[in-house]
Each structure stands twice: as C-alpha cells, then as structure tokens.
Image (cartoon, rainbow, N blue to C red; front, side):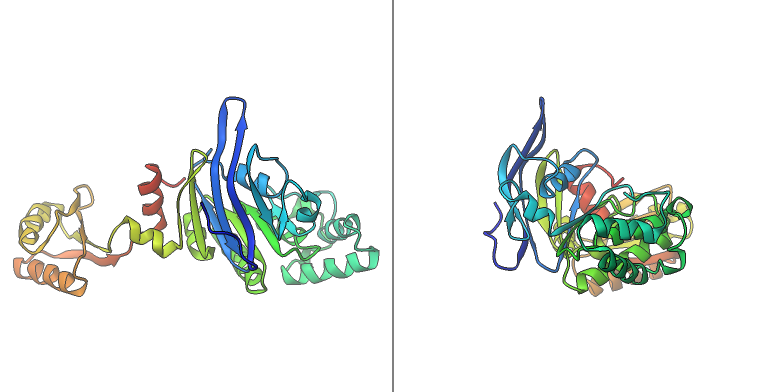
Length: 319
C-alpha cells in the first residue's frame, strides 16, 4: 500500500481493481504522484497501463479501491476531476478538416472560455508549441509530429494542473519524439504533474522522476529510475576482442582476476563482466589482457538500463 496522500500529492490511488467478464484487468493498483513531477507507468502489452489511465481520468469506473486526482475523488467528484486534468491518448484527437488554430479555438469555446479568450489562448499555445507557421493549414496535412504537438496543446486549453499522456510518442520519428520530450519537460518545469505511459524505455528514463512497473494488472516494482537499475545489478564491464578466435584465451586469462564468471556472446566475441571493485576491477582486466597480448576493439563500463530492469522484472524484452 502506498503512503497516505499529503498536501502536495496530485494523484493517489489505493487498491484499484477492474474486471471485464472473467478477466482481471487490474488487481490492487497503488500509486502516488507528487505535484510537479512525472510518473512513468511501464509494463508489457496488456499489463493494465491504459486501464489505469482510463480509471484515473474518470472514463472507466473501478470495481474496487479508490483514487483522488487534483484533490478530488474520481468516483464521487468526477466532474471536478475532469475540470483539472488533460488527457492525450495514443492517437491525436484532432479534427483533420479544421486548421490547427480552428481546432484550438473550437475546443476553447466548447470549454466555455468565450470566443475572444479562446482565440487568445489558441494563439498562446500555437506559439508555445511552435505551430504558428502551420496554424492556417488543415490538420490533415500535418506530419505525425505536428499532430501530436497540436494534440498536446489541445489538452492545455484550460491550463490543467494534471496531465495524462498515454503513449504520446508512438509512431513518431526520433527527432519528433525528442521535440515532444522537450515540450513535456517545459510543462513540468512550470508545475504541471504528469502521468506518462510509454513503450519507449529511454523516454521514461529521460522524463520520469518515478517509475511504476505493472504486469498482469499488478504493481511489481516502483522507484526512481536509478533505484530500479540498482536492483538489477552492479555496473558491468563489456569488452569485445578483436578476433572471436581469441575469446577462449581471454576467458582463460581473466578468470584468475574475476570474482564471477563473465557472460559470453560468442557470435560477437564479447564478454560482460560484473564490476565489484570499480576502477580496481577495470585496471586488473585491462592489465591482464595487455600482458596476454589479446587486442580488444571495445572496452566500456556500462550501467544497467531500464531495458534490463524491464526484462528482469517481467521476463519479457521491452517492445
């Protein structure tokens, strides 16, 4: 169970459950997000990430447990929750026939900003998200990256303090993805609280202050990215011998100076060695290989990644 919410808790859930016929989509989901931070919600396909977001945004009613978002109970006060959140799903929810500006003005009017205020807010967001140059074009002519930026801008019409992004960069090219990351970090710097689901682990590593990993509808791990990486293991030294034929000789040479058996990739001529003594281990390995006359083409110290964490926790590679 998570700690009790405090005054600076923007999202808090305890024991969330959801069942569809004979399938338990969620079983006892607990999480807590401090205001002005990013929670990365990770898990394999079908783990319950989107169901969690749907419940917290009042789109789906839980079968058990309770949650508060922006200070309001999601079941008892859903309208108050909706007034204080923004949601961007996996696909851009914008009208392709209207222009970018028309989309934002229409949404502002529907949210009762008033015509003049809606136009002013639309121009502010178009400028902030670097969409002013294409604001006059029909959204159907936009690239995927431009659509996602417009979709994110549309979530901020009423300046909500809490934002939910459900796999917001799926299908984007690396440049567009990084541009969206920059915009997200700027929002968080301004005090917005963000819950992010993503299939890109480097995205969670870059954006998230805290990570919750779910599998089969349950939370199986939570912590900061660094805390989760430390749970997987120590740093490792990876080296690649110049000739795969030297791999056996390298193993024989290094065993006397190692405390654990290296992991071997024979096809790539690579050894992965757990580092227990930091620079001391590295120096011993380098000296032993040099004395044995075994040349290497790559010699690097690598930390565990979120990919390692994901595979370790779920038994599945990241998608």
